[in-house]
Figure 1 (cartoon, rainbow, N blue to C red):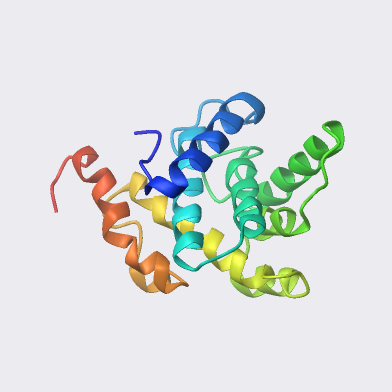
Figure 2: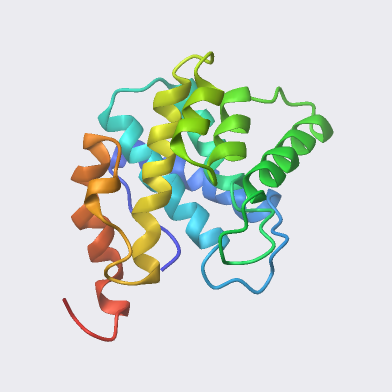
Length: 183
C-alpha cells in the first residue's frame, strides 16, 4: 500500500512530491521492510493533510514535504538508528547544493532531530519561522504511519496536534487488512 488518496486540493501536490521521491531520492538501506519510499510517501500525505487542516502556507507545506521525502533516506538499519536523521538532513543539504537549490533550514533541522527527543527538536527549531509547529506536525505524520508495524504500535496520546489525532482512525484503517488478527 504505497500511496494515499488525499482530498482533491492536495492530491496534485502529493503526486508531484511522490514522483520527486521516486526519481530523485536514493535510500542507503536497500532491504528495509519498514523504512521505505512507500513509508516516506505516506508520511508526506499525512503531513500535507495536517498542514491543510491547520491552514499552513505553501512554504510551510514545502518544508514538510522536503522533510518527509528525505527523512529516512540515510538509515543504516530498521531499529532505532539514532543519527539517521542528521545523515538524511546532510543528504538533503548535499542534494540542494548539487541542484542549486536553497536549503530550507526548517526541513533540515526537522530531519536532523526527528530521531531525538522532542525537547531537543523543539529547541533546535525555536528560532525558525513556524519551526516548533512544523516539527510537531512532521513527528505526528511520521507516527501516524506506525500502524504499518502492527495494530498497537501507535498510542493516540503521543500525538502532538489535534489535527493528527483526527487522522488516527484513518491511519489505522489503512492497515487493517494487513494484520493477521482483526481488531
